[in-house]
Image 1 (cartoon, rainbow, N blue to C red):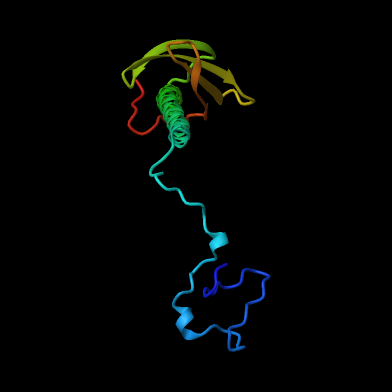
Image 2 (image 1 turned 30 degrees about the vertical axis):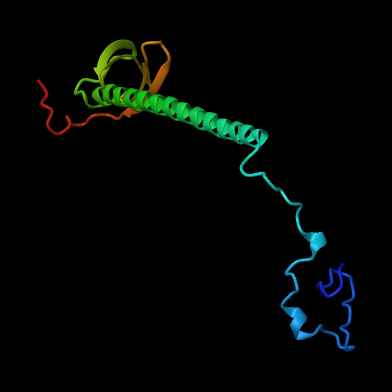
Length: 173
C-alpha cells in the first residue's frame, strides 16, 4: 500500500492510526479513500465486451431444453383433450342407450343386444346386456360403447325398477 492512502481494514485487520495518534485519518485524506480494498477488486477485463462463444452455446442448450419440454407438454395436453372428448361422447351414447331401455314401456328382454349409433359426428358400436336381479320385476342394464378401433371407451349401468304406471309423456299402446 502506498503512502498517503488510507484503506479501510478488511475483516480481521486492525485499523492503522493516523499521524496525530487518533483512530481516524485526517479529514483531508478521507476524500481520497477508495470505497473498496484494492485486493478485493475483480481483475480487469480490458477489451472484453459481450459474451463468449461457450456462454452463448450454454444459453442455447438451456433454451432448447426448455422449448422441447414445452412441446412435449403441449402434445400431451392435446392427446389428453382428444381422449377426454372421446370418453365424454361415448358416455353420452351409453347413457342414451341405458335410459332408453329404462324408460321404454316394455321391459327389455334378458340377454345381449348390439347396435350402432351416430353421436358427435362419429359412429359408435354399443353392447347392452340385460340381466336379472333378485326380483323378477327389476333388471340390471349394462351398456358398453366402443370406438372404431374396438376399445371400450364408455360404460353405463342402470337398474330398471318395476313399472307400476308408464312414465309421464309415454303412452301405452
